[in-house]
Length: 345
Image (cartoon, rainbow, N blue to C red):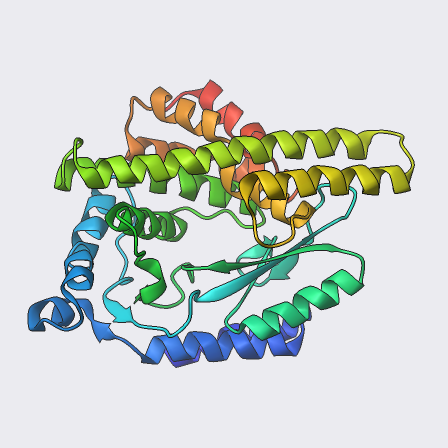
């Protein structure tokens, strides 16, 4: 069944004509490699395979999934196997954006619709495609990703890249599992920003609750997790300020050459301040919008639902008609405000 699904997906992608054949080939090969590998997590824990720290973290996977189900997330067959991969990331994400406007390049896929990024299992292939887009005049960004979701097409495994080396490993693992399971629970075609923002909100909020229940609100794991998230929030505020500054620049009537020079100054400053190793482009900054938008509105919607995540998920289903009639990848705040005004059933 999995092989058949893979073939159907590949044929659909080829028929769409939206990406090079090499993208489809590498995606199919990479997914098939993950599908056929791995060992059952319960066997790892029961038989004492791998090191003690990894076993202890993997023992949390089933409880994390059950915890998510209590809060309205879908029951899936995901995360029952563990796969070790000999690389720092499972995929490398390529995104692109207009050089003087925050208008992302989008790719259209069957079933899932328009998406503002592509994932490559081979870094050299990702780099080649990113260079190709840059030659066509796009701002591009190439970044590693330690996890991804197939939205229920396959039974996704826990990957070695999903287990961090830091003291926040348990909270981070819970966040990733809950984030990706949210994608299998709630997904709106053509609305990448909404999808990723909702998943990020649920992952962060529920991971903190999971730590409270399992290791305690005063635990070192909880403190480290919150500090890591606080650092990410501080980085987000700096990126938001740069985004706003650049958006105003792009909307101005200044000559193109002046805009490009000022853009370089702003992005160089941002790169130095946040110690970002890769080049900072519009494609880099627009990912802040993709993953970090709508947080105040999502928090308000949760409050409207009296803190009930299942009720919030049911209310989020009402966004579909509005999303279908809105531009692709619309601002989540615009999509969520009518839900807040309408109340939580």
